[in-house]
Image (cartoon, rainbow, N blue to C red; front, side):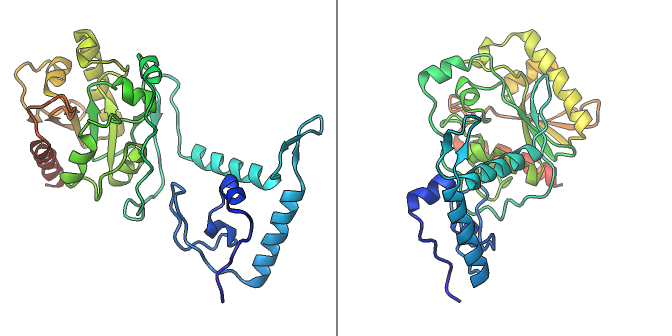
Length: 300
């Protein structure tokens, strides 16, 4: 049977956000969850005819506001699709009213995602400046193998809303090269870490231009909060990214990179180098090797 071919103009299809597989009555062959591509599948004639009729009806029935003015020329089909997508996103978000956390449940597979996410749009200087003091939602779930804790968000990361988003940061390459992920993830794909039992938080939640803008009291309070979070979630390993921050946050002035004393709640503790590109003493291969040592300890 020939593949289903949709003869509507491409710009209309793109505006509606309909991939080829969706237009084939949802008989999906290979659908990318971030909506970057979709395979084409065959559909029986009756399904094709019914779909064409639905599309024609939608195009002929615009959405009207309370004054009967046209709000959108492409009709009810567009509205329903946007609502379904919004409902899908809300299903896996649990937002805490104080410091936000993303807690996502349900199976997803890192292996099945074959197309990298599109690169993040670069925030403007004004966006970066306006991000001072913002927080980024923690990426956490119960029973994590490793919870990575950065020192605090950079202004660039806070402006994007993703952890370790600044292009010069080496967290994502080190995570892949050390074997924690099967490929290098983009910051916008951070949610996929939960599939392999990894999470991200920060010692201090607020964004600053430099880590030295944080005072000792903030770091100590952040260390106590981290220990509580790790205990409540049943985290196996807490990995703090930055030995100087760890020393201040946990009262261990002589600590070095590597394993640390176990936390009171039972989580094991490890200190990793700060992956910032400004940390020139740790080259990319050396940084990846430090991450790999933790991975080996986790797997033991």
